[in-house]
Length: 395
Ligand code: 13P
Image 1 (spheres, rainbow, N blue to C red):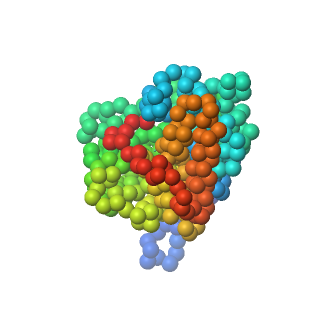
Image 2 (cartoon, rainbow, N blue to C red):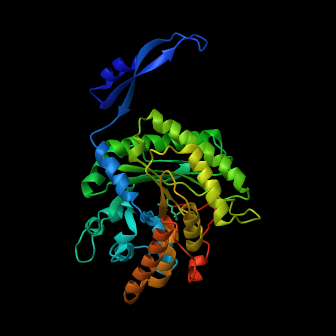
Image 3 (cartoon, rainbow, N blue to C red):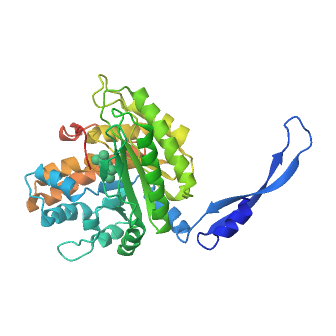
């Protein structure tokens, strides 16, 4: 079907703009005379396109990155248990309040990913968390996936649930103040990965991205390639290239506007159980090679996950990636690598709140400097150097 009539057919349900025409040459290459025909290039845009592009740009602003605190209640329970606290709503609220009311956080943090419970919570004084964020010029975000379950027919791999009802949930999240979303699926190198698992991960991410954009939320696209395994860095590079090529293939098939998305990749490192560790320079080289081969410059921001690296490691690796200009904003969207010292400092005691907030600012500032390529690990605490890798980690 010609694009023109295809676009017309779809005009009522989806909005298409930019029916730009260009001239395509036809005929044999040896021929000096070319017949020409008109070809239209449709670019999909919904009601929110301009806003999506603006939101993505705000999040990808110089010297800033994302604070990920979107742990499910079960995972938040593990964080609280590590400092001897029960997994109650009151304790989860207290911990999130500490993080989200840190004065000056917006100097280094441009977005915060929340779990659904947190999006609807307020401070003990009755101020909505989303308003605390807005006052710091931090964009509120929301985790929208429903977690991982076994993928039948695969090699013990998993797939990510959450597409059912996603459009209506996203509408509600937008009303509550969320402006971006996150969907995390995983790919396991020791399990294969199988072609089926990679395809399922990529397709799910693309469907989620299209639905999010349709409802005003900038989708963070996160196919986490787990650190698990004893493979060398070259193997991670190979898998990452395969995964990202499939992701971009399906993003295009789903007409996702690349200017209105953000990526959350794993860094390309050797497997956590590989005999040799890689330096930040090597990790930066492999990771940027992979990204340059697979990610169009239309994408505004690359916001890495920390994946079990120590706080200092995650910051050093990010810093190494920003030693020369990149086609995209290269920054962070860390959970464990921003929260570890904070939790240890807090210990659930109100008298430690200020010190814990200061330790959050220390990590946020370090990563802000790393985003600008100006970080030095001098003076970092021993605690911040401790790795946090957990085999088979679930989020
Ligand atoms: P980590 O930085 O702990 O790997 O967090 C990953 C994540 O997806 C949080 O949103």
